[in-house]
Length: 401
Ligand code: ADP
Image 1 (tube, rainbow, N blue to C red):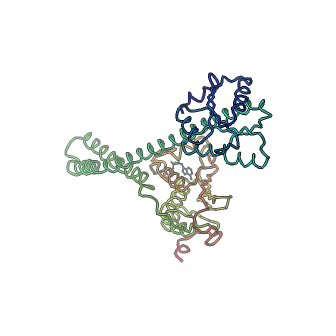
Image 2 (image 1 turned 180 degrees about the horizontal axis):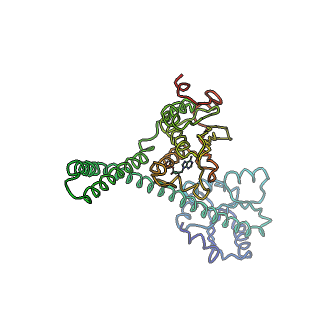
Image 3 (image 1 turned 60 degrees about the horizontal axis):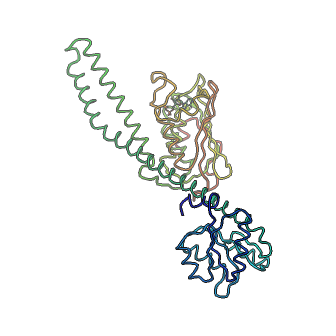
């Protein structure tokens, strides 16, 4: 039935298919509906075969059915409607229907029931049934629209990712040529052409190298989850240990003190999880203030997820940039001030969100930052903490033990 058919009862005739063996009762029902303001066109049937034939001839707006018929049961009309995939409301009109039977009928799918000696209520019952059907259709339509939009969004995201991957992957080769040949030019012809030529060649090879780094970062970003993450139980304490070892030089050079509480195991890709800690702690060291970095990594259980925080005493972030910093290549400082390309946090966000978590920053300019992220704790990983609590990592020596 098309949506315009649905509107028919409001504007035109109400098409009723009535399952009834008593001609007088059928007439009384039609009368009650007319009295209630409907323009009624009614077909009366008594058997399943007649019912099916009428259904095919014209789709009714409503089925009204007696409960007991000599050759059929009124409620069986519901099975026929279901079999035909029709969502037409069925209202029982019966001489006597005990409460228990009435409840049973409603449970089986009848929309309403009206007693034959209370037919004045029938028009209202029909109106309500039609309204319910309209609302149901609207809800189904809204759900279908939403599902279609989600699917379109997922497809366009996948296309975009594929594009970013192919573009960054395929650009590498020609860029390698540009970089190699500008470098060759610089080596062979430095001092042999004029002063400007040396400068221009220098700019060209610097630009090519910079573009190479950007393309590699973009490729790293688009690779996250590209081949499906290999999820396993990741002990975050062990991941932290790995990160602190690989950041050893920066920790030592900056005099950073890194503490962490007990950390749980989560269900994730090990190298991705390690990368999240590495990017956050690396940034906490890089964007340090005048004092040596003091960094604290904590986790706590919050209903269905773990809440992690990486807190530092660095330069902080003005609240208006709190969202932008997670966008690819978005940075708040020049590269001469702080090195980097602005991809680290975008990668963290992609990893965390792919695992069903969220990431955000709570920060103020000059007052340090607290990066927070959640990870679901309903996976097959341990639901409890593992590893030592309040480890104070000051020296590499300690880490290596
Ligand atoms: P990158 O470190 O290469 O700049 P990121 O994506 O890791 O890229 O970070 C984006 C920006 O967010 C940084 O340039 C910096 O401005 C800001 N930022 C990230 N971490 C911190 C931090 N711990 N303290 C202050 N600013 C930060």
